[in-house]
Amino acid sequence: MQLTLILFPIALAIYGAIIYLFVLLVKALRKYIKSKDVREEKKAVCRSLGVSRQAVSKWESAQAIPDLGRVLAMADLFSVTTDYLLRDENEAPTPATMEDSAPDSSVRRVSMEEASAFLALCRKQAPTRALAVSLCVLSPIPLLMILSRTGEGPAAGVGSIIGVVILLLLVVAAVVIFLRQGMESKEYEYLEQEDIETAYGVSGMVKERQAAYRETCTRGIIVGVVLCILSAIPVLLGTLAADSVAAPERIMLPCVSLLLAMVAVAVYLFVRVGMVQGSFQRLLEEGDYTREGKRAARSPIVPIYWCLATAAYLAWSFITMAWDRTWIVWPVAGVLFAAVVGIIRMTHKEGRKEKKAG
Image 1 (cartoon, rainbow, N blue to C red):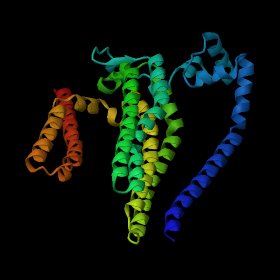
Image 2: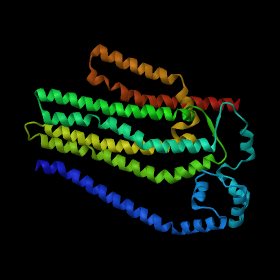
Image 3: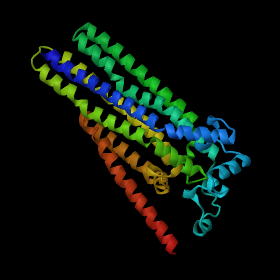
Image 4: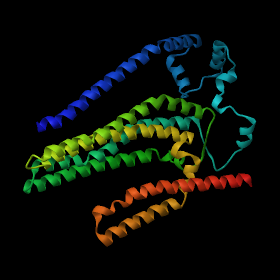
């Protein structure tokens, strides 16, 4: 009976995953069938222009730019002007924007090549970085599983050492990934710190890719949230089953391990889709990467705030020696930090308004 209570949610989760994969397969098949007309139209365009489908795909994704002859041919083919083909309607200049677009030495310009390379790098790094974060979450599982089997005695000591060694190896592997990817993306750090201005066509290209990725991002977040909610089930069932056995840790520790495994999968999804979505927001200066947000992050108040939080944590911990309770400083500091950033942003906005009014 106890084994059934533990295995039932696992079987239910596997069954749900199979159904979810089947639904995704059906959606992909329907999308492929509906895109038949688009593919036929693209083939006709390729024949008319005398180019390959790969070339047209690169033009659509802004990875390449057609030559003047192809542009003229496309204008005749679609009965539009060349200006219509070349101009990004979202970035069409107006007299007002032209007056405000005077060169500013404090604003860094991002070319199409830089933007495409940055997006490609983020998409390439996203799975690996998500895996590294998941490894940190998974690292205690070997130790917990060993402790659940060894019990007490000399074997428990040896098992604990082995578990800690495995934990440290997993964390080291994750840190190596973080450092390596940090060095690879170092040249793009200015996107998070400096005000930027994208070259002609970059914003349109990024928005197009962002729209195409939106469904994947939403799906990843939904699955991750569901996994986080369901991760409590193994612990709840383990608590019920542990009351009737002599060694409850033999049931509870594997249940906690299953919880960590489910959370690790959720974290993997969050980090993977979040990193790709964040790359779009950096180039568009949206979300956490608006100019006000960047100025708030550059504010000297930020490092001072975290230094004070660390000092308060250490002082409270060493004076009271209540390390099991002083950790509460960090979640409280994190919540208060959001309020501090909001105040800094409001201050910057008010300052800009006064400057414009003056």
